[in-house]
Structure formats: structure tokens, C-alpha cells
Amino acid sequence: MQSFLNRCLVAKPNLLFSIGFIIIVIIGVLGDVLSWNKIRFFPNSNLVGIAIATGGLILHFYCHRIHQQAHEKSQQIEKLVTTGIFQKIRHPMYLGIVLAFVGLAVAWGVVWIFIPSIIFSVLAVLVAIKEEEFLLKKFGRQYEEYMQKVPWRFIVKIF
Image (cartoon, rainbow, N blue to C red; front, side, top):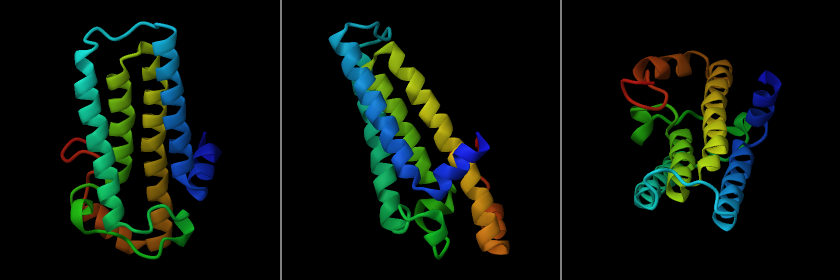
């Protein structure tokens, strides 16, 4: 698992998450076509899920405006971004991806879609944690100070 996370970090994590989105969409379509079980509150869950997914994607793309090197390989990132939402949480882009995965699963309502949604959400958290190890090595004391100023990875006062 460690080497898998290392490869995700060295490569571009967006490739991993693009694959996650594709898998979630395929399972959602199959669930509709094959009439797989839906979650209990379907179709009301559609609106909630769409709101969560849309909010996650808006957050993710908003962060791109602040952190313009975000889709570069980790080794190519030249400076820490500590402005905007990055002043409150250290990994808002990964949070946006997790919200999009969960939101798509809730919106589609297919029970089986939650498995890849959870797997790719956990991978996003693990990649973010692995990325912190890399950033500590690359930026040293500067990143340590940032971690002290911004102690929350994803959700303020929770995690």
C-alpha cells in the first residue's frame, strides 16, 4: 500500500481520482440499467447528493485559482500555498474530491456505488497524508510552521 501511495504522489493524483470518477459513473449507469437496489431515501437523495457533489467540485476548482500548480507533479511545486481556504485547512482540494465522490454516490442512490466512493475517498485521505510527508521533506521548517498554524487537514476542529 505504501508504494502504491508513493506512486500516486509521484505521478499525478488527479489520474487516480479521474479513474475513481469513471468507476463511480459506470457503476451508477449499470445500477440504473440493471435496476440494482437504491438507498432508502431515493429519489429525495438526488438533490442532497447533487448539492454535496456540486459543492465539492466548486471547492476543488476554487482552490485551483489559489493553488495554480496543484496539478503539477509534487516535485515541481515550487512554493507553499497558505492563503484563502488554505489558511483554515491544509487539503481543501482533496476535501472537494471526497465530497464529489460521496455526493455522486448519494445522488445516484445505487447501493453498490458506495463501495468505490468510500475506497476512493479513503485513498484521497491517504494520498493527502503521504503528500504531507513529502512536503515536510521538501519545505522543512516552513511546512512545519504551516502545520502549526493550520492544524486541520480536512475539517476544522475535527480532522
